[in-house]
Amino acid sequence: MRRRRGRILKPITTGRSLESRALELALKYLPRRQRQAVELRLRGHTLKKVARLMNVSPRTAETHIYLAIRKLRKSVPTIVRTWKAAELAYRRVLCTPGDQTRT
Image 1 (cartoon, rainbow, N blue to C red):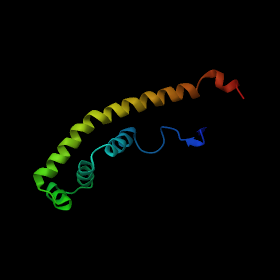
Image 2: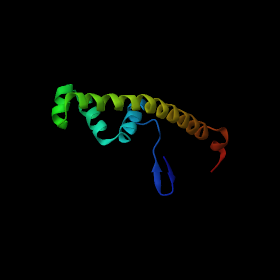
Image 3: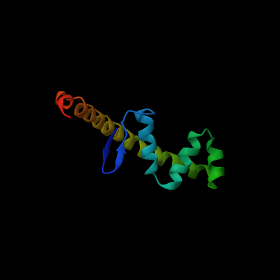
């Protein structure tokens, strides 16, 4: 791990899959109600149960989920592509032959 301005930078490839980390990041940027609806649905609740837990009609809950999915379809692939490019650049920087001779 490397340090940058007092913070420790962790390697990009640790832990969960790239797609799940991208989804988690993208969910943070959704509006609160859309994020809540998607998280409840991902936990396995039915659409009626999601609506009941959010105190809205089933149609409103369905709209929240639809809009969130529409946004996530655009943002998650972009995040994954960006992270894959960053990971490739990170590996190239760490694996250059000149780095082994430096002290």
